[in-house]
Image 1 (cartoon, helix red, strand yellow):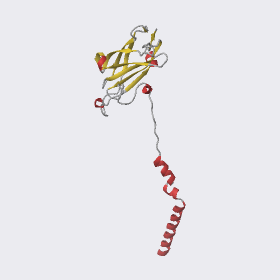
Image 2 (spheres, rainbow, N blue to C red; image 1 turned 90 degrees about the vertical axis):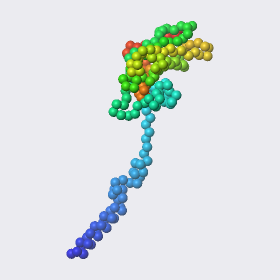
Image 3 (cartoon, helix red, strand yellow; image 1 turned 180 degrees about the vertical axis):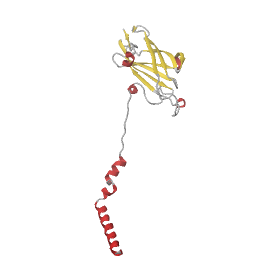
Length: 203
């Protein structure tokens, strides 16, 4: 009786061994090709924002705050970008015979780290040239970095004939960055929906 049980056990082991040899992929759950594919898979996703055309991401970008001012992650970490509470500029019409400067005012709010810098970008009628006005602590007229009024003078670039292009100069965007490098980019359409000016005329 004992020899019959031993023989049956050996027979079962042989059958299982033969079955494993015939079906290695099924027995282990995946083939060697599957394993190679799973461990060698790599995918890169690049995200682009609308500010990419108008501001760089390197250290020369004036809207990037120093690393020493950027707070680390935590329960109270600043993850909200600044808000534009008001924006205006003048004159609405500029004579090509004048000094071709535009006076701008911006009201910016940021409830935690405060505004580091902001920039308003304008394009010439032909889009061949751009002009920019920067707002930071150096030209804050009143308030604080968390709720401040900023003023700036923007000089329009001249062409090879030493003249400013005539026609409507259009706002491209207003970009704001706080002390933790949280950014908000508002397009001309965003400002127009708030009833804010987005272009001026050079005659």
